[in-house]
Length: 204
Image (cartoon, rainbow, N blue to C red; front, side, top):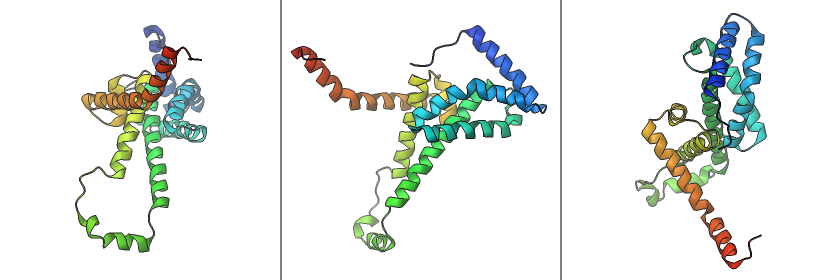
């Protein structure tokens, strides 16, 4: 886990300072919101980069998250920690951005009109398919990636992740579990190769 845990005292102090900055921003002090951006932009960028996999998208997620946060600040009303609140906004926007990109890629790879006509007339395509659709698979993968990043890279709690995924705690735990299992399966060949090299005394 990369994110270092904060002490209760420092976390409380930051939350109180954030609450003051939110109140000042709502009162018309734009410099107060700049304090919030500077304080939380690094953690938001870290989350966005791990979710999207590239700097350009991560920077856009950061900008959009704080823009949306500013626009919706009246809805915040100090109900929770500002850092957690804007973190959720960023995670949700990152998920939306990844899904939009995947839809665009799927659209580019879609068959031409004449090809689709032939596919629609194919009797096999009229048979009901119980397999999950590509969109459902994409959503599942996005959720697993988000859950894994938030849990094991950012150290977020299950309830916090569940709020981002708009899911129950039990479902979120299962999502995290599936993500870990998939990662273990993906890494298994490398682990076995390293173990064999160690056994043979050839490990570098």
